[in-house]
Amino acid sequence: MGRTFWDNIAGLYDLAEKTNGRAVRGMAAEVTRRLPENTDFLECAAGTGEISLAVAPFVRRVVCTDLSLPMLDRARKKAARRDLTNIEFQQRDLFHLPEGDGTYGAVCAGNVLHLLDHPEDAVAELWRVTAPGGCLLLPTFLMGESGPLMDTLVALYRLLGFRQKHTFTRQSYRAFFEGLGLPLAELAVIPGRMPVGLAVLRKPNIQEG
Image 1 (tube, one colour):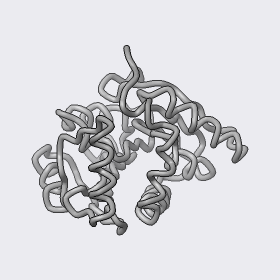
Image 2 (cartoon, one colour):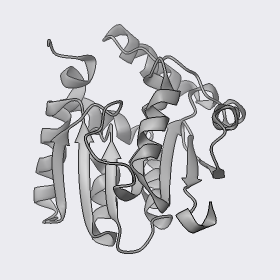
Image 3 (tube, one colour):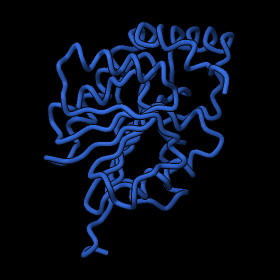
Image 4 (cartoon, helix red, strand yellow):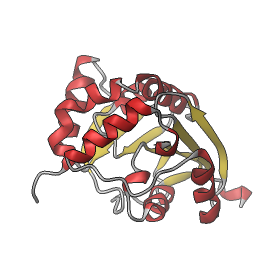
């Protein structure tokens, strides 16, 4: 398989994220704040690992995954610089995860649903590996609410091959989950030049039905 858009921009990804730094930092902090204690954490589509690195000090184990090996290589180097020892890195397709049902107490996929033709299939697979009593956290850029600077950056990305499939607003992102019939516990909006909608889905314990 040839190099993808994400492989090609891996070296510039962190720099690009800084243009929306308030939202990116807030996203990592708000995900961390909602985690169950002493849990195993899976992140899919992790990019250079900003969320995984942020949560690592607060969980038992982190499995940081992405389809792009260059992105994972940068995440691995950042983890080494921070002396994080409870984190592992694996290449994964988030539509086909190898784990059994209910493996992780917390599962996250950040800023990827707007890139997918069928995001509902990705959510179903992420929900499958979320343990009863656990949570699925889905922060996603609300591209329909971005400011001029981010619109310019997205236009430059498109020249390099970027393509988004959905342009979410907070209203349409909420409607997406309502259409799936999943238990959306919260939709928080994290401010920034391009705000992030953080969807929090909590899976009932088995005894709760």
